[in-house]
Image (cartoon, rainbow, N blue to C red; front, side, top):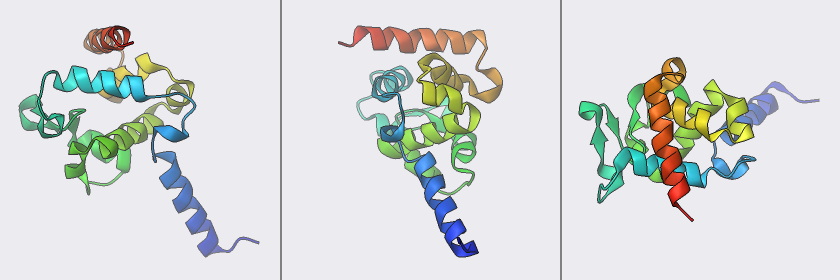
Amino acid sequence: MIDKMNKIQILSILSILSISGPSLLAADLRPLFEAIREVETGGEKNPSTAVGDHGCSVGPYQIGRLYHQDAWRTRRGYARVREREYAERTMVGYWRRYDPQALEGGDFEKLARLHNGGCNRWKSKAAGRYWAKVQAVMRSKP
């Protein structure tokens, strides 16, 4: 029989695994991550230091505070979105929260649109244009 403490430990482990990174996913997200990073930071010499949206988004994937908070369900740790691996785990957490089916199914279009437009504007024309840019970068890579 599983006691209360063991249940808490199991839930904690499952929670960590749920946003631990792309290696646990059916889809290989590396091409998507690289394309999003290129679209977000372009020719930035050091994408980790990139700042956009008038200071509201930072790092290689231009993640804002609310996006980070939605992904991790805490305000702590936001400064770490400048680190590529942490930022990618943040994106996976965000995608898992708002569309786990797209994440598990490898729907790159939906994931890119969510990253750009958020859960409320992912269907917008702007998010569609963003996806077109991401897709073009992905197609240009061997």
